[in-house]
Image (cartoon, rainbow, N blue to C red; front, side, top):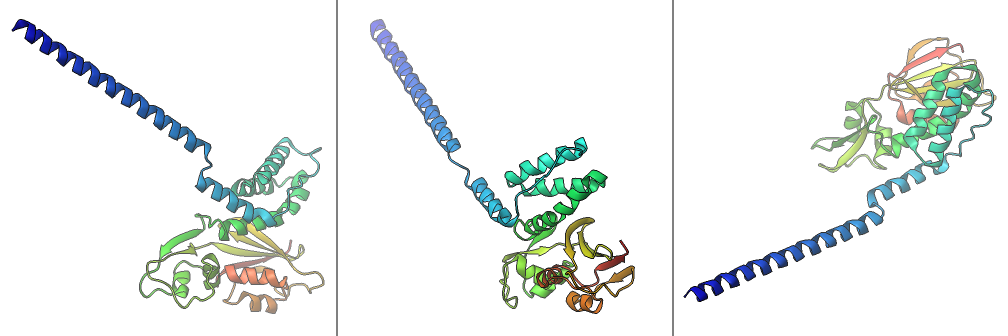
Length: 270
């Protein structure tokens, strides 16, 4: 009996050892397989990032390369910013370019004056891309269409224009909106305009920062409006025409599309 009991216990021990060994082998093989999958996934490009980079290259395709010009005689701060701008332009980093240009403009030093004039047009192009292509969340809200909503109502409730709402959403017909569909709209943009008479330029500001500069066309008469603080009506094109302010046709359409009525319009002698 004792022999049978010892033999039975031996088989139980052997069975336990075998089960433990099999479990260990399965666990090890599972870990190896998981690590292999993780390595293979890490070697593949991330689709979201790849798509974002592709989109960035499309957005910036019309923006010319940065020409930082001479660095001699520039302050260390300006040199550093110019080099950073060059690198961010080469990498297609939209936000970094905008931030760097804004910092250069804020220097207001003699050695930065010529650079600032050259970078203002670039800033305008980048800001337009950031607004309409990247839908900068600082400026653009996402809403869902409710029953009874119209494009005009949505734009008006967000202090925006119908034209900018249509452009943001790629609409050609604003009469039909689908209930429940997500749409984009400028979120109470704080635009204001500054006409610089001697410079013959109109600066568009958004939320306290210069957004884009527009120049009065060569050969056009000087603005008839006197220095002061005004408010724009609904049709900016007609208003500028009455004020003797002539911009390029595309520039005027762009302003009319973005700037809502009752926007502050300052005329200064500078």
